[in-house]
Image 1: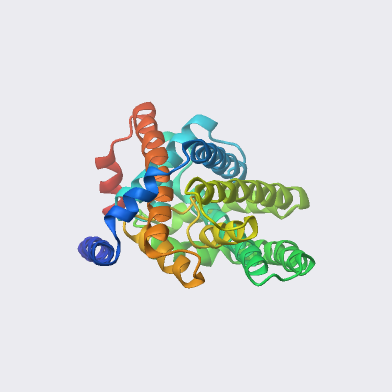
Image 2 (image 1 turned 90 degrees about the vertical axis):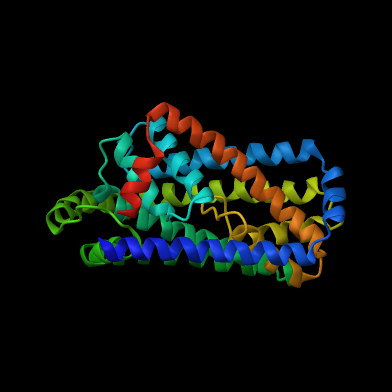
Length: 328
């Protein structure tokens, strides 16, 4: 317990140090007046459309998560649990997987042991979608024929996903406990509880191995990431970018592959990563890249905060309780 608390404190201080370094760099290289001028010309209509796509994608996060859980929790408690966990990830250095497992267990009958294995599958689907977004970005940046991209994406979807699901279903009993012990500080972790959860998990994974289950999960993922792509595209357009549509989609796909809204990063970290990846393309100066990073992060911060506060009110979850469970 003492070791875990020391590790948690160390992680907090490391995060604070990273954020401080990013802010210092921004203060040295960003022209505040130029930044404010960029925001003065923001097209609110286009930006609002992008936020609508963000909200639609957030709804699909809950729909896909409930599908993986065989629709056992109701939509409302699952949605609120997701919202609270994503809000906390933006504000606190707590692993999002931890808060998500904890919040779901507090608002429903789904235990952390039941949902943890499915969290791994969801994270794998996110990795696959990153590869798809990255493939799209590379194709557009280097003007590669679209049919080649189609072949690569088809191979990723048709070969990678079934192979992983089959492998994971056979090795879940050893993989899941290892992941839980490394990434989630869950109290009262016992082999007995985990073995009981594995029985239910085998039923879930059996249905996921069916063609229909895989197709539905991938379909939800593609739809969700497509909406997030539109969110980033309209963000570029709202800033009045001089890029053509091919370049806008390419840059949006690049940002999506790096930091999708389904895996939010904390303030400072988000902006630093986005700026670092956008500048090498030569399409933006540091002020424009920073304005875009701030705009996208600000939209997610406001949306997740509103939804998270709503979730806290509707479920009576206490942040102190979540922090205690996550850091104990």
